[in-house]
Length: 305
Image (cartoon, rainbow, N blue to C red; front, side):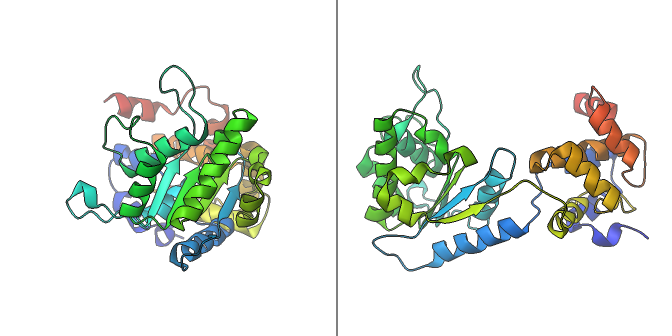
């Protein structure tokens, strides 16, 4: 049976194009919804639409590296893009996504409340220069108010707590202050080892009591549905049946239940299949993806062309 009927529209568009076009499509970031992400999306939509209160309800998303936290927040924010009036000072962002991983900005790794404000301002004004001296509490608050932010998404949030106790408490105080002063709901994503980051602050532990955990994959219908979703982005005329039992067990074994690792194996296997001009991705292609010490030659050749 032809696999074309299960393909996404964009995949069908590149089905009969050149190998380079198909390789480019395979290597793009494609979003596949899951049960956990669907639950998270619904709660974030609720927080976005809910009435403003003095003690806004917040959401804590946890999961170790490669579980899909960043993709989850990014895709939700893309559903609510900035309203651009043409005046850079009148942007409206109902949802603001902040990547809060500390960075080296003047010889030292930035941590604490000042770092959080800087990252919020950088996310709100991505084209601005010289933000370092314009990240006071007042300026940060005014930006969030002017841009109409109702839901603040903070990715890599636990990284802000790696400093000493004093810096940790100041960071938590800043999170609580933004939430309270501006009545902004917050979705905060951390790796599992920082799951208890809010326990140090009694108010925040109550506001972030709703938690969604992104677990490792295991053999389940949910994982089969995820693999079927991935296959919808593979530009081949015949089905590869990624959701078959043999493939499910193989991907769980060598992908170790990690979303990023599974996606990488599927991408590499698909590129090996294109390199041999196959109509679908076979188990041999997956073995090549696992065992080969170099990327598929066709990918290297096209990249250099």
